[in-house]
Length: 188
Image 1: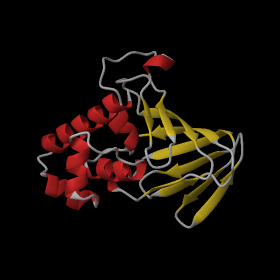
Image 2: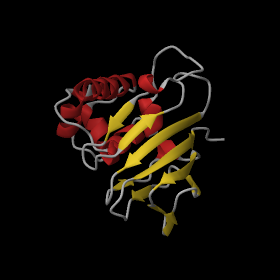
Image 3: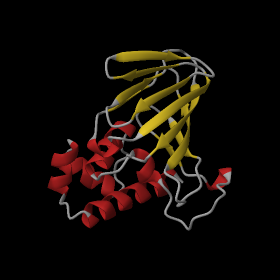
Image 4: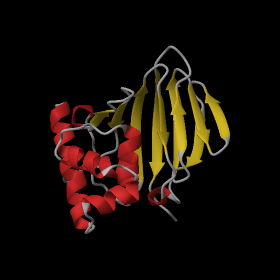
């Protein structure tokens, strides 16, 4: 299954790159990711980390959630066994796209299982400017950095923040955390 997802990620990046009329060099320059790494990802020879994939998506004009949006026929129901799941190969964090696919909603709901001691940085990117997200912690603890501000979140806490300004997700404890990201893709 993970190999299938790696292949699907590579195919989607290549498709989006070609649709935008970008060469590998163009995408490398725009994302700050090497041409060789992008080529390896497109051929499913490498698994991108969350941070690297976010940079490539931003250069393609997409948020990470929009990239993982399922292209199947719209349905108002997303059964758990049908939801897209991706594991970051660097940190092991597990990301489940909970929202029903291909609906007209500008809101994406993502369930995240974040390992103890893990840290993921998402650099600022223009694709996310105007988009916002809520991070709602269910279990464990998270440290969220937005700009210069660090927020320590406990179960039940919810943090609202802009997407495009960049942020850091960090679990400062020895226990895994679980949280929900509610992303509003609207830039109005």
